Image (cartoon, rainbow, N blue to C red):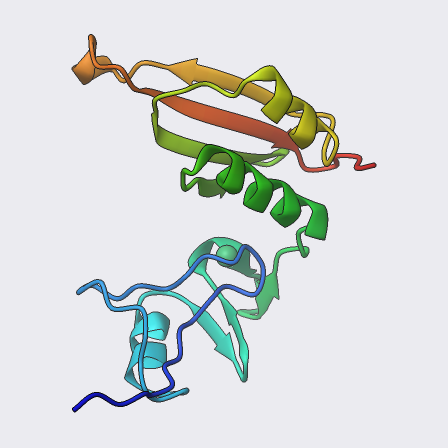
Length: 154
Ligand SMILES: [Zn+2]
């Protein structure tokens, strides 16, 4: 027989990364159980119902956790529309000054209409394409989109 059950996952409160344990599990029946424990073992910071991936906090000289500044909602709107337009998943990373979205299997570059839709959300982004070194001759490229952290939105 089949039955329905509620499962819980862990998502970073700042960058929305989803936690996956070493066996690839990202859902658990317990809201605060083994999955949360292994997230903590893997460097996630857990504070009640708030969870931060290892990239989204630092520890200061007094051994206190300092979470990085929240990311503007428009960034996630941009990322969601981008994923809908391209039907691809993008990984998120950041540098001192930039948010970076990267897709490793880009078969079709952003066209003008897609760019216009995206620039309507965040006008100021740069996109570049590279063919991965080891697979020259393959059709796909990596697509990297860089957005300044102090971006303006409409
Ligand atoms: Zn995060």
